[in-house]
Length: 327
Length: 296
Image 1 (cartoon, one colour):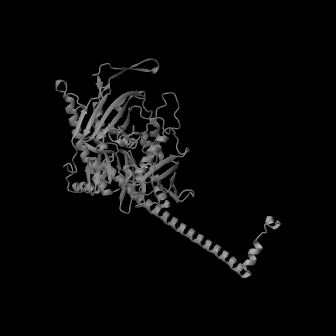
Image 2: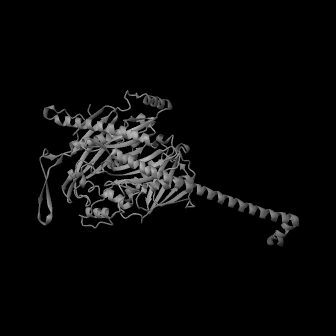
Image 3: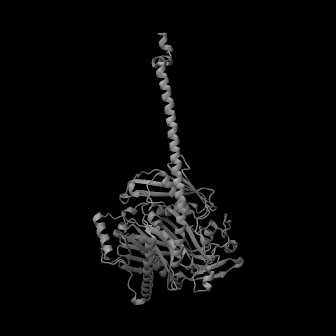
């Protein structure tokens, strides 16, 4: 992940390091050795095993749950509510706010969670802004909340996918379906949909990644990560976040990889949403049938009563008031 | 960014100007506004720079502190950015109004400087694994006239160039404890290499065209912009942190064109900045112009 906080060094203060994956530069090397490295050029551009379920919560209008490999994310969209303080800047557009929260058990290091939440929130807002028709709710704000249940890499891209589904479920008008994916390059190996360990390696081992580069000064060891969110009907890129150090050619290469993954994800999300609509339609039909049945039953009763004579029925149903009777 | 109220007619005027490659202030789409740069004007900071890009006014101060390096990167120093949006710049920044913008700027700077290839953290190392320099880069936005990303990164780079780290000698005491002696002589100092330090270039899309250095009015008209972070290494441009901003989307080919434009402009800008900084540095003694700062 694009994590920008540097963890404070507590080792030399005598305190123990809390649940760090790597404690010395050597550990990272060991991990990199143990990793089964993908080929230099990935041949199969596919998303991870994905599970998406819209409408998981009944208490809010729009919700979606998504599993992307081991990354588990829940997104909630509430209907737009009126802005309390309207400022001049917001006159011609609705306001979109995204909040990201980690579940307490989602991540090992608790120290930097608050900061990460804020950063993810602001990046998510930037990614979702282009897709929502913000002109349709002037002077209103739309809140999207994301709860991260498990973090195994590709956090931001999974959150974007999940929010996209939740928006549709809530009935907010969007320009297109939005899909996102992540790719990174580390020591010439391209990792698609990197896991948390690879991302951490990339982030924490920036120090060691260029030891080879300094010895062979001519070539630069590129390393970096790209998160691309796209809307494929008109092949628009909604957001493209990059970090690390990449040559322009590599950047475009990684961008194309993520765009291809986005296309196949889009098929999946479309399938899920169509199924959801059909399911909803069936539910509606069933409900209609049931209410028709109920109407029929009541009608029958009324009919029967009419035949018996209504007055008689009413008389028989009036309980005599004990107090009135006494007088 | 600071909000400027524009009518539809004014927006159309700007849009047509951009289409004809002749902007409101007479520039073409690839031109920057005039810049003024001055370094070393804050006496309490180790390094400082003030940049004025037309109406945008930025003051950067670099402060130094000795810290303990991260155990994972024992030979790296640390950098920390802080952006303060002064309420003088626009009334909107009053109270906590500027914090969103400040956070965005800090994030893009941190992202751009994160890679050790973009900024050589080794120069900030004193004793590997024990002591290192930590630089606090404090950025003050005094006036907002558009294109903050570019102005801030240029000023930060200039301030880093101006930064003088006092020379430190270490003596080994008993039990492996080291004692640092910081030189008293203010001229006995080391400098920071800025060859690869990245610059941010905002490429703004107005209508069907991409342009650099948007003014505040042009920023209102733009649908989306790409912030390209350009770092020069061995004479070749590299990307060290790029993102889209402005709430719009763009096609892949447009994105590639924007990157190309950003890279070529960044390369040019970097060359010019380095040249000007060197020129200013050489003007010592009686040739050195008086510090003007804001008194003009």
